Image (cartoon, rainbow, N blue to C red; front, top):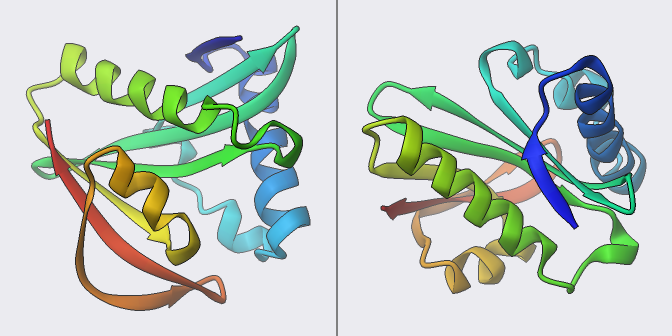
Length: 141
């Protein structure tokens, strides 16, 4: 497996393809909410297995923190540690390329235990985003 920054047009398309399959097709997130116009200001990540895109994620620098978003792994590749590897890749990118120590993400409530295993802590109350219950989670690196 290879995880990398999505830099060229094919890598960006591969990143978007994973998100489309997971969020739009799989979770019925409306296309206009998934395509929120923030990809241009984000750092995009794509995971490949045998040259096929199987995972994605992005982060944006916002004020004094990094916002981790759109972590997605194709269903048939879940529970193989790919999401954890994507998160570790993102955290290392932030650590190596910024002075930011505070990470935030809006986790789907069903995914919160995954992030808790990566030392993220729940903050505040749950809220609905794209018809799915979420909770803010934070981590200091």
